[in-house]
Image 1: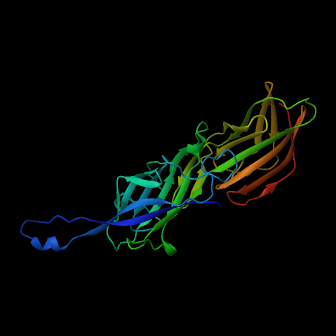
Image 2: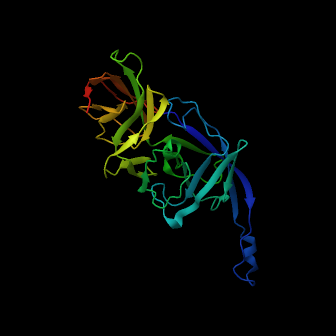
Length: 303
């Protein structure tokens, strides 16, 4: 899987602990040393905008990520364990600026880190409700990074830098169209739709997306190349097997006899051969972001 990386560089920051009472001057000597965290990015080749199938984009000035840090256990986040609660880190001129500033609790307690792009306030880290925004592909392409430390034992303030590796957790669907010579030229495609589940819950601690199976909605695929190539971010799910192409007001429907896989961190490419009387399936491939399966065979009839 192609991945994005962000590195947390640590700089010293001292703050004095308040004395428990004016009489107890010995507490002045119990200075708590903390360190604040600034973000320095190092980005690998991985798409952020996700409609073209290329792996060429990286974080850009103005991008924002949410960062969370907690203590206690790598597999559980409670309100009391949060040390950093949605610090918004913004990239500008190659430098990430955090608001509010991120501070270690102390220099010895193990910390665990979560990064999320785009930014979002999370209150339920194991079952956060999410709905696909078909009109905003970039906002729907959720990237998640976890840093539990080696063997899940956490990181302390001495671990410099702290790295976050972002992965896609949604799926992507790409539909390529070719046409039979029944048309004298490439026809005008007015839309490509994929009836599918559009709501899910997200477990950030396992990077798992679970479709809620509420009801399928028509997902309108964005135009990548007019009349020939369409794409959309999708909720990972089973039971997806239908694609509808509209030409001159007429729907041409492909119904697969088996599921077309929509898998977390993978993109599925469906190649369809469209005729006036039916659609034939060239092939279906599931590829990097992460290697996957391949499906062949099938045809579709007009409605």
